[in-house]
Image 1 (spheres, rainbow, N blue to C red):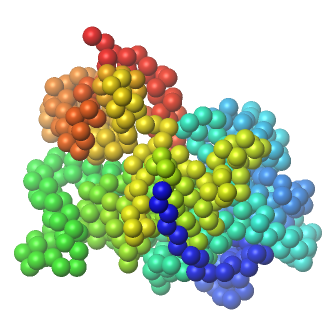
Image 2: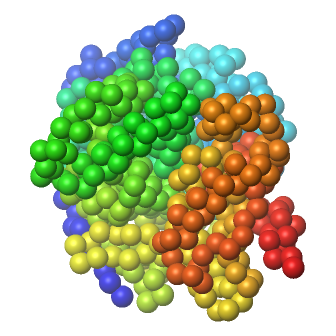
Length: 590
């Protein structure tokens, strides 16, 4: 058993809440730009004073509508300015936000509303509202139908003093939000996260090295991950606390144009986003006859990153050349000003980490769960160790149990699971949260995640196999979208693979396969040859008993829409194994 603790750097008053940052900043410097909202082809600035006034008006409306301290209010919307506004208004009214992914089914919404006991719901569109009402929601306020303006008007008679009394009636120990787990292993559980979870973790993170990213002058970020996810939510509160200018991009289809016009200084994303950026650039280069140039540029970026502060003269020259030819264009694709990105949710992999670092965008990989208010560990600019997920944040302890399970204790750990005492007792022991993940901790406190405890496969021959490292390596191939490694109680390891439609298009053009369907491509010898390379690369990293012996290419991808991916792009293994059981069995047919 190994344990590593980073002591807290900041003592946060017990009365502190998430809303303090808005009110304190508005009192000190009401004219400071806090947000930029999309308007036409540009972005309209919103000062912290204006934001505070909008929050107050909406919070008064919630109070006038009968929302009581501690009441749960659901929020069903894409990532947009009104999401953040409503979130802070709910907190200012003393209530608890219950975020719901905008892609959620009626069945999922029904469960969250019933389990949380939400008394009202804010929906983005009429379609969202219809789904919410079908799920049993009675008090629904629709953003796109003027619902927030109606609420604000309703609260005109509520005094500032009464609202301030309501706001300050909350303390750090009070519940701020119920965030439901993504349901990769079954029915979602409501994680009870308090105001202190956000404020104490956030202020300690800022007192540490993250201030070099979030606290820099002129700092800005464009949020595009779902704010219903704890990762984006923490970045939201950190940015408001730190004075970072926030923009919102609700549609992935518009992300690149939005990045180009907003020009953020840092981003947050899941590894799949970085994989797609890399694969897209590679396939574009190949289609344009510049594949060899891109391959050389990628190898140089990785070598340059690994060289650290002492690259040789020849490497410096090569890097400078490729910076003009390749790297600058990649930086321009995300707005031109991004110097850092925060990645979490799954393993990024050393190759991509070194590639982007060599390009000039340092990816700070971290680790955490909904239950740990997002990060438990993170790499920092001054203490970057690519290939790990960093050291514990200040105020956080990491322990590796006797069976290799990662355990977390500290300022970020949830209070418990809502209405689920049995799950709470199972997950929490003497303040230590059992993550269900497996990992290792080195002497300096850097953590590596090696897989999921419940996903360890045991072959018929008794070999224990962690699927995640194999899946990550196969998925790194440009033509691969998803990979699910199987083989529990089977004679050998196999895999289900889906193809990436975005990367396929230029590859099809270059290989004379334009117009072919995914089903046709799945059986094409040229596609299979590429997938054979991906599998061979993955197999080179493990022992013979752990290698993928056979794979099947599925005719469709796993997506959020077909519910095989969570909104944070994790594969719902239990659903895939259930619905593609015939494909799994076909791997082992004689």
